[in-house]
Amino acid sequence: MSQRKPAALALENGLVLRGFSIGADGERFGEVVFNTAMSGYHEILTDPSYAGQMVLMTYPLIGNYGVAEEDAESGRAWAEGFLIKELSSIPSSHRSDLDLESWLRREGVVAMEGIDTRRLTKITREQGSLRCVISTIDLDEASLVAKAKAAPSTEGHDLASQVSCKTPYEWTEAFPDSYPVEIQGATQPMLRVVAYDFGIKRNILRSLVHCGFEVTVVPAQTTAQEVLELQPDGVFLSNGPGDPAAVRGAIEATRELIGKVPIFGICLGHQILSLAMGARTYKMPFGHHGANHPVRDETTGRVEITSQNHSYAVDADSLPAELEVTHTNLNDQTVAGVRHRTALAFGVQYHPEAAPGPLDSGHLFLRFRSMILSSWQPS
Image 1 (tube, rainbow, N blue to C red):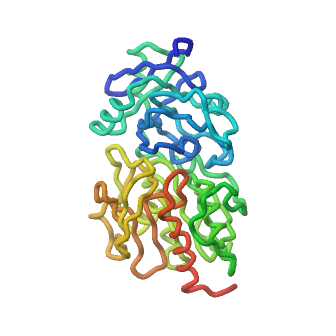
Image 2 (image 1 turned 45 degrees about the vertical axis):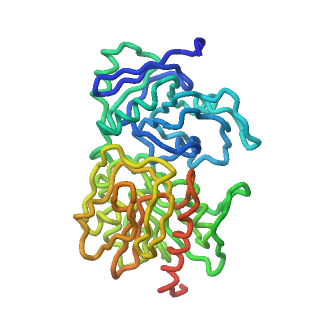
Image 3 (image 1 turned 90 degrees about the vertical axis):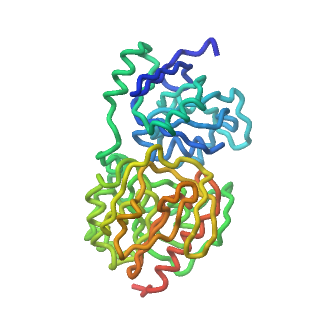
């Protein structure tokens, strides 16, 4: 550790933590969020939902199994920075393509080890997701604290449009052979789905293909009319980063699509669906980020362990009469899922594609398929 380059993290509350660089040289800004998953760091770092955020891992030893390129959830790293207690120096997995430190440097991720992650997690729980800066080029405490206080917040910013694709494309890839499939796939009839990309993850797309969908991915700014011209059997609203209320174009497009085509939303997509119906969202103190959140399906009574990554939530008191709560987060009783009482539309606040995370909720993709087939008329 003594040979490593020093790095520093400063929070807007004035706290400065010193450690050692395990990634690229440089300086990055973001809001610190902690993730309680014990594994899945590669999927987390490549999840576009982490744009604008500094990821703190609560598990003390990270990097044990290296990086397997096929686990990437997008084409690049999106987290603004990466904070861990200790880096595993010897990755051990037959699937590993390279070690985590080499990958972090290649991807330009500013990262550090050697900090008290337990202390930082406690501060985040008590004071919220504070703005921060991580640096290997400026180690002056006063300078870093001033930079942290000046860092932008995610509130009011449409980060989804920044991470979205620029042009539509087709997705045909199903799960890789190494993926532990738990749900029975479907092939007939094949259904056409248009998937809005607000920061979509590859395993969501793979899950749709596995469940019998032909997938066309479209940018976040795509209008409802442009979607309807593609004659989809269903519309999917993806996960993504930032303040859902700031993604105004998508909210308006979703409002126009409700009742015209079946809709399924995940995470940010669930929030956009709720906003389109007149509900409100709010920023949570420190959000839900991890692979072990219990959720109760109010329609079945079944409890599922879920993967979650969101800093905003739907306000239960703001739900219009047309929306009913279908899922509840059992840690804090927040809204974890809604559905329209008459139109074919539902959303969940968690990640059934399970990358990383448990496989309990993969059946929701089949629920989407069944919902479409309940009113399907072949074109």
